[in-house]
Every structure is written in structure tokens, then in C-alpha cells.
Amino acid sequence: MRVLFVCLGNICRSPTAEGVLRHQLEAAGLGDVVHVASAGTGDWHVGKAPDSRTCKAALARGYDLSRQRAQQVKAAHFAEYDLVLAMDKSNLGNLQALRPHNATGELDLFLRRYGAALDEVPDPYYGGAEGFEQVLDLIEAACRELVVEIKGRL
Ligand code: 4NP
Image (cartoon, rainbow, N blue to C red; front, side, top):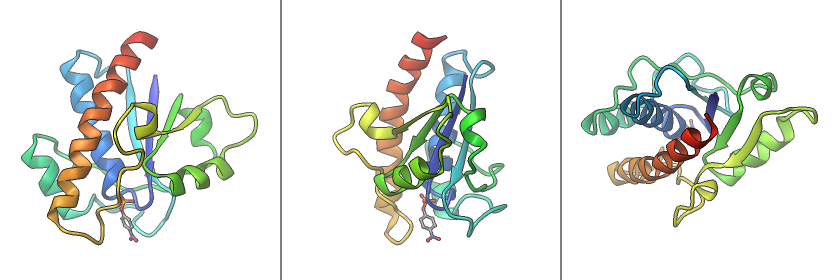
């Protein structure tokens, strides 16, 4: 199974989700059977490591994001991934426009699918440190639900 997380810049929210899900899958013994990646709808940060504030907040909770590099999402990703999960409604709209009509990969809004109190992961880029903690809190909880779904699908 293959899962792709998508945000705007691919340097804050979706790299965090990639690192958290990979960590949770490894803890569940599923690290080798699920491929996890992330991408951005924008291209400004392609080739860059995640934002230093994102890396610092994630590392404090045991997630090492330092080897990740940003990429821009493309139509071909919908053939490569079974599940494409958008971090907010704006990204979801852009992904719906990009998704080929015959695509088999599923597209959904990450938090709405996994029953969180919020249905979008707020963009932390222009805010303070607490925004990065909120991103981690929301993503950790939703990824736990995603792991349950993945176990049911395997
Ligand atoms: P992300 O956050 O979508 O969670 O990676 C952002 C990163 C960069 C920008 C916006 C959001 N930016 O405008 O460069």
C-alpha cells in the first residue's frame, strides 16, 4: 500500500505526517509493507529539507525528518499512490483539479477522514512555535486512526 500526504509547501505539515506515519507503522511492524511519502501543491521549496522549526518540533517527539526533500505533486502520483491525503481544503481543491478522471488512487481530506475535531491542519508557516506543536498533535492522532484503517486493508 502507498500513501501520499500533500500540503502547500511540503516543508511543514506533509513532511510531519510522513515522518509520524512512518514511525507509527514501524512501531506496528508495518514499516516494510506501506510506502509513505509527501508532496506540495506549490513548487517554491522543491529539493529543500523541511522547515527548521518543523524538524526541531518533530525531533523533540522522536521523528527525524532531516532526510526528507520537498517535491511538487503531479498527476502521475495518482497512479502511484493508493491514498492521497490533503492537509487542508485549498490543497484538496487543487488536487481534485489535478487528479486524472481515470485515476484509481483515492483522494481525501486527511483530518475529515479520521474524525478529528478540526477538519484542516492549520498552516504553521507564518505563526509561532505553538502552531508546530498543534500540527504534531493533530497529525499524531489522525495517523493512529490511519494505521487502524491500513491494518484493516492489508
Ligand atoms: P506547508 O507550509 O504547506 O505545511 O509546508 C507552508 C510552507 C511554505 C509556504 C506556505 C506554507 N510558503 O508560502 O512558502
